[in-house]
Length: 188
Image 1 (cartoon, one colour):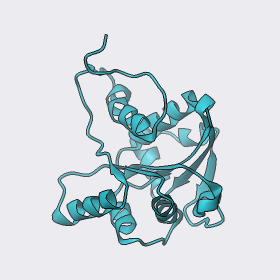
Image 2: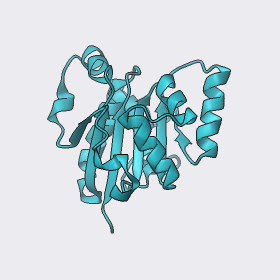
Image 3: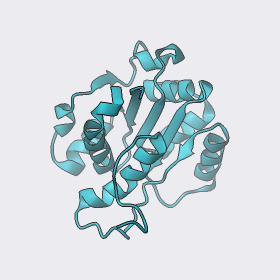
């Protein structure tokens, strides 16, 4: 099996727990991954520190890039990163992606994966949606992206905040095409 190269972009939306659980899951999948590139927006570290009370994002053995580093390999399709996951994804980030703006590394990477017909997964974390949000979701879906709202499920009976977040992250991991084990409806 060919190992995967993926990018995770963490926007300044609330929901840093989703990014943390995603990072934890990706570490467990290292046998399927060649590289993980990570982008933090200007606000993402501050939100992580406020919501999770730590700077544990520094503890992950991934390649971190500044949000304006257009020399990052995945700023070009020739680097062959196959998946971009924006988790959590703010409505502003989604709007810029839908508009085709490439004014930072996240939006440039999104432009690249869409033009190369690779996977773009946006874990949107806002509620309720207005018509602009819905139209942006429609535009991204029509362009080949996947909108995966950070809407947890409860049929697995999660008992901790991380287990609740994992109900969303496990869907993201499935959508990205990784082989992993998680709760499956109707299976023991």
